[in-house]
Image 1 (tube, one colour):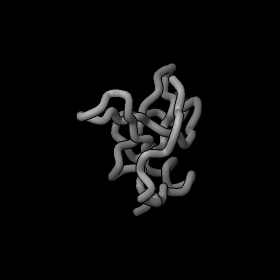
Image 2 (cartoon, one colour):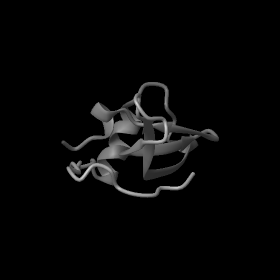
Image 3 (cartoon, helix red, strand yellow):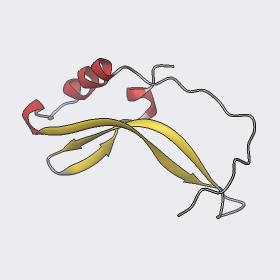
Length: 81
């Protein structure tokens, strides 16, 4: 996959929660064991454009590695907005 150019000049700024806020959020989720969390990192996920499959939008978010599997915090869990 190769990113070629920015199509949308109206880029929105999105604020994410701090790392410590994300840790607190993850630990408050029921059934999660803090000892099994292997990594926590900000990242991006891609959304395909419905009209043009060659166009994607990158959305920032928080992701964590738990028991060997990556999970994304939902927007309401990991957003500082």
